[in-house]
Length: 198
Ligand code: GAR
Image (tube, rainbow, N blue to C red; front, side, top):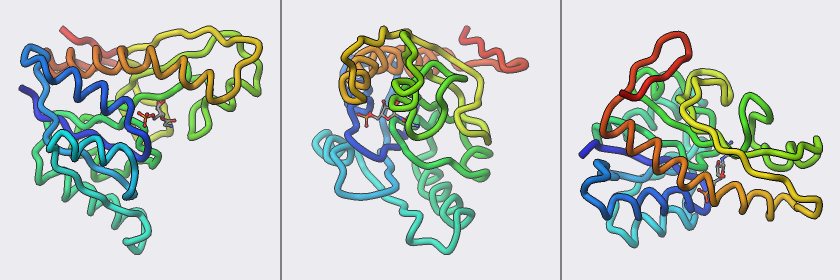
């Protein structure tokens, strides 16, 4: 199987969907570690419950972002991942990590609409009638990398950030499981922003 490290910052429902998918050996993924930028989060508990090694690299424990990025790169290198998945990891990854790894991110909006840390609230405030989620390769911009998959979700009149985000997460879990599995089993090629999974 492909060696995958998942990066998290919160609840870890996307991590859980990936963990559940790995129960099938045909899925082709082994989650070799879960990394976070903070401790005491449900996502780390989920990893521990499944005997998956965890590590935490906090921005505040480093003099600057460059040093933090280098420390995260060192931790990742220890696990030799074929793929890194950012699943609710709420930090912008630095140059070193991106130079060393292929990173997939999942985002709760239809990019390029509503990038950033408040995508669901921003989409709701804008008044869109359809939103959704996007899986993309991470580049040095904020949610700007080549798109791997998108799923649309309707916005209801009485939606709050929580109800819309919950509806998005339902389809996001399936989207991420599908994309990570296909990348793990088949690899990818990239030509001018166009990703092909053979
Ligand atoms: C997911 O919806 C993910 O797309 C989003 O955070 C949620 C994490 O949920 N990520 C971002 O907003 C990144 N900008 P989870 O911890 O339950 O998987």
